[in-house]
Image (cartoon, rainbow, N blue to C red):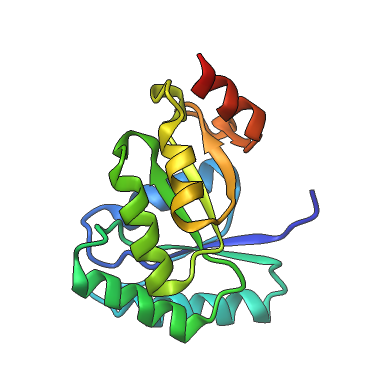
Length: 169
């Protein structure tokens, strides 16, 4: 495709987070922008978006630190990033193995930043399909993609019929 993308590492706290993401970017041939450890994640995200705009990137993917919806400080950090960067789309990544907690998790993130869509991971390990249905019913936002394995090609476009088949088994 003709989409010019850049990846911005706004996880400035977890040891090895940026190195790990940089390696993935190298494998995928994507440009990587990081910040120094301990830097304000919103500043790193903002600087990355400015770089993307100046260099005619179509997409700037901002990777933030993983967080639980019950961690108030990290949720406030996420709000700050969203307020500073003003992204066009905000995608929540949800682990399908989370179970019923997926509803509350999705609802809290949606309240905090306004989720536009969801990527559901580890669907291959959740034979019931219940997490997908829970997220859809919980926040009414579309599931965009499903993670069905460990390789880069294991991210597939969401097809409602596939989830229905899982539920009806």
